[in-house]
Image (cartoon, rainbow, N blue to C red; front, side, top):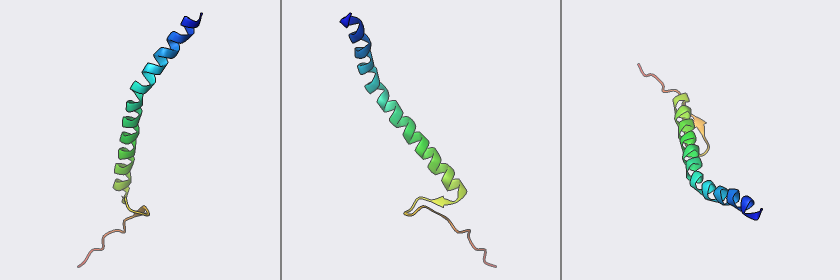
Length: 59
């Protein structure tokens, strides 16, 4: 009976660390996409995050 409980726990312990890199990669991709979309809207990545002023046209 103990062996039937240990096998799934062992598999779980081996699979979770293998997937941890995938989660970090997905989170990094989501952050990069968010930064890209913010830049499209005119925001800059500075402290504090603020929206860029529109460029003035000179005649």
